[in-house]
Amino acid sequence: MFEKIFDCPLRIKALRDGPCGPLLERFAEELYQVGYAETTARKYIRAAEHLTYWIDGECIPVSSLTEKFLERFDSHLDQCRCPGYGHSNRLLLLIGARLFLKHLRDAGEIIAPVTEPTAQNPCLLNEFCQWMRQQRGTSDPTLNNYSPSIRDLLKYLGEDPGKFDAQSLRHFILKKSQQCGWAAAKTCTTALRMFLRILIAEGKCVTGLDEAIPVLAHWRLSSLPRYLQPEEVERIISSCDPSSPVGRRDRAILLLLARLALRAGDIVQLRLSDIDWKGAEIQVSGKGHRQARLPLTQEIGDALVVYLQDGRSPTDTDVLFIRSRAPFRAFASHCAVSVIVSQAMRRAGVTCQSRGAAHILRHSAATSMLRQGASLQDIAAILRHLSINTTQIYAKVDVTALRQIAQPWPEVQLC
Image 1 (cartoon, rainbow, N blue to C red):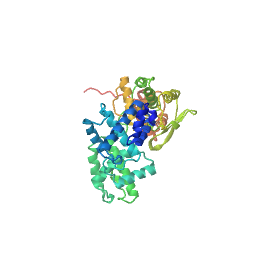
Image 2: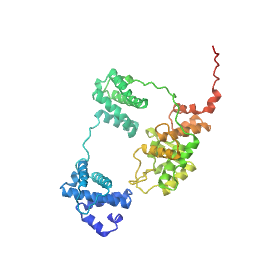
Image 3: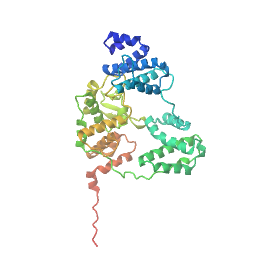
Image 4: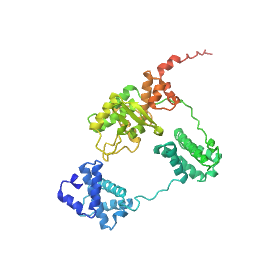
């Protein structure tokens, strides 16, 4: 594998003859497979070689490497006198060393844990998450949103559900709601209500205790959906550079958000097999793993073809959209999609008035469809809403239709 990264036979021989030659060669193979450029891979291998030389001098076995030893290696670089090893770019040295440490851990070469053990989740929380995954198909991001509230509740009331009572639960909700906004407080009540229902079903707490969780005051349809004007959406899409791989990828993502009203999470979960080129459809896995098939328009299809042919780096993963820099793999979370949209907005000179830049395009697509004459039922089908009531909020932005039913304001006689 060294031959694919290094040209000099003497350099390759020196690496193989070193004390950790086989480990370094496997590390080189991983760097090559995930798509690192030759220059970058050489620097990271050099950093790993420097690390192995140092631990050999310190009599530290490879199997005992931890993050603490990396801190010592960092301190060693201040006064490094290792023959043949320069450290002009200290940041690259530390990045390469950490990548090598992660590689050793993944390969099972390290026995000791890389980090100090962290506190485990309570057993009741683990059981709740397992039940939600198996019985309801709840995704990990949703469970990650629920877990902090349940963890705080168990810390506040203890881990014996038989001692839970309505007064303590209400006091906890009140205290929690004063520390966060309405949306976070609603997530907390939803999580606790579901948690208590499972405990009740298993006979671990008093029946009906879930009804003690109060409903937070919030009036439906009291706010307007945030959206952009059609010309602003077009400016955002046009801000992508079609001559660069990143621009081709970002344009395809923006079109899916703006034309099909996909969520950021939908973009992250898309696979190559989800595109039906013959049937001109795209399959989307939404909330609760609900599958839906949406039309693949000519514009979106062309953008995807351009991205797949000239913008997507070679990789083993079947994820549709991947990182633009090595390692070439899927986005870490839906937040990466929002960052892409935010950057496009800044390039286009469009101001986003609220958080969740990707969701703004979803609202804008629904608003545009409504103004072009689409019914709420049609919009609900595109947005994949289970209830038409969720879609009704967009009726408030249809000013033309509202003018037809608006009643004249009664005149008031002056005193």
